[in-house]
Length: 187
Image (cartoon, rainbow, N blue to C red; front, side, top):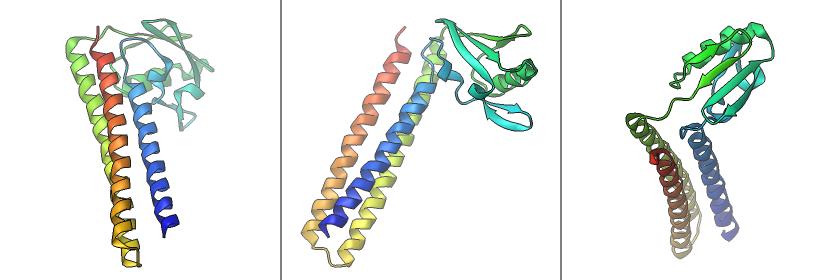
């Protein structure tokens, strides 16, 4: 039974690690006023009838801290890339010069900073929901073991350990969210 409890804990940690990775990835997409190629990582371009990630149809560079340069592998993809950037509704206005697309990153306004802070908190809450779901799944597994003959003391200890794991990950989520909010709100 102890081995099964350890398996449950390990699986719970794995699920929570995945939730943390997802949160970090989502937070990296939220811009802090500086240009970074990952800002466009979520854009999908209609390319030969299929939705394709932008980085597979073009090279994205940052010539300076306030702009992005997109050079498509084929000129015929320029219009589709421009359309995809508009459609992604990221608050950018792409400028097409016939060979490249240039995006100037506007400085963040106070209102936009508040909106981004709300988005960051929402991502943090989504991560916490994932943590709670992992905890519920683990607790259900422990309860199933209790029905199969696990002693109540071992069950209570396992539940306490699982709750401790959840609390630690919750603190990590709070720290990530707080750091990203500070990055966004600082001028």
